[in-house]
Image 1 (cartoon, helix red, strand yellow):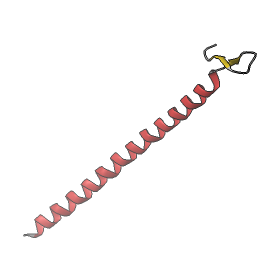
Image 2 (cartoon, rainbow, N blue to C red; image 1 turned 180 degrees about the vertical axis):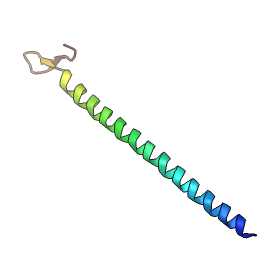
Image 3 (spheres, rainbow, N blue to C red; image 1 turned 90 degrees about the horizontal axis):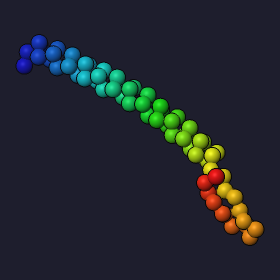
Image 4 (cartoon, one colour; image 1 turned 120 degrees about the vertical axis):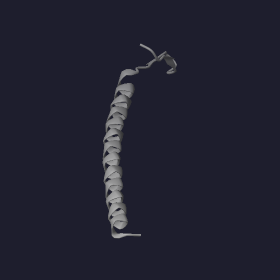
Length: 64
């Protein structure tokens, strides 16, 4: 193998690792966005459901 082959292989490794790093950053951003969205859904879901009880203390209806 010649010197040019080693230079091209080295450059391709650098480009591939840079590409993988950029893709990883984008995936991390999307994961953070989905986690924030999921937390907001959990907060909203727990705050809106109200139960009423009858005279014995049992839940009567869950949608009010």
